[in-house]
Image (cartoon, rainbow, N blue to C red; front, side, top):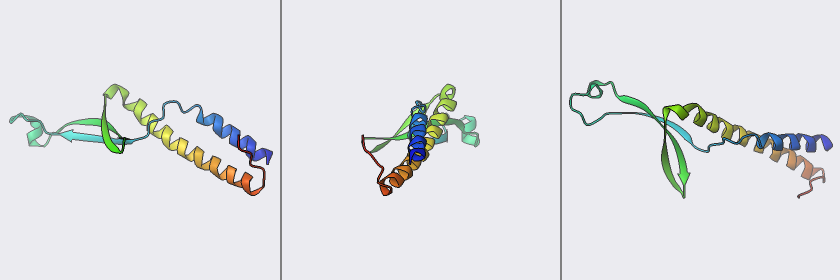
Amino acid sequence: MNDLKNKRNGLLKELSTLTQVLHGSWVERYSVCSKKDCKCRRGEKHGPRRYLVINENGKQKQKYIPNSQVDVVKKGIQDYKHMQEIILEITKINLQLIRGGNYVAK
């Protein structure tokens, strides 16, 4: 059981390193402007423009992401997915500890 607790502690430490977590979806859009003679009217659309789609108060919101921040935001989304994997693993460990009678809530 100590092995499980040690593994859980390691996972909890790893969670604390995920400081740039972003919970959302990545969207890239191309657009057509209002200029009649623009190249976008001939199929060469403007973009991509990038957005992080998040839920705020039960509503979807699109947050524009400047080109300079694309890598940071994509890393934050990856970190969120990794955080979910870690939490699932901690859940499995805690269930094993409960079944073994060694789960102690703090």
